[in-house]
Length: 185
Image 1: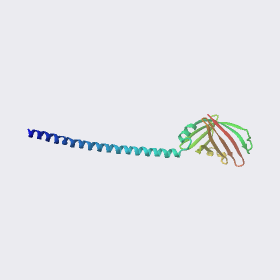
Image 2: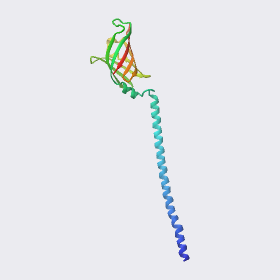
Image 3: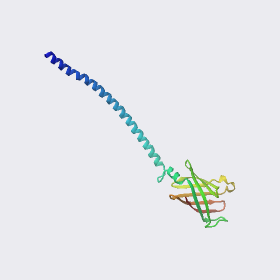
Image 4: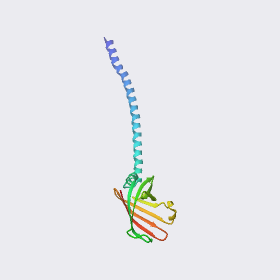
């Protein structure tokens, strides 16, 4: 009987230890898997942080009030343009003269393009850019060689959702004309 008890004790003692080694091995395997997943998670977190930093750098480089994307989307399209002469030294032009045109504003990368039309005919093309929340344009004189000594500058500022205001200055060789501009949709 003593031998039976000793055998049982021996089996009870060593049998769980075999199972313990198997459990230890499985536990070590699980720890390795967890470490690998933790490393993957850390890599993903690092990638997310790098993307956030890149987005913050991009956001900081855009104008403070609106991103360039929003500015372009809010300004693109047709605008009814009313010009009123406020100062002139040119013959044939008088203070109070008014002109109406339709301006189509579009964007090509960071350039602003404006086509001015009267009676569905393009009369002038302006090219410029956005500088400190203002649109600064110049006439593309290459379209009209008879006016090579004429320079036209336009400055516009957004005043509301559907309103732009500004000035248009025409400088010729011997005189100049200044218009106030009001653009509405």
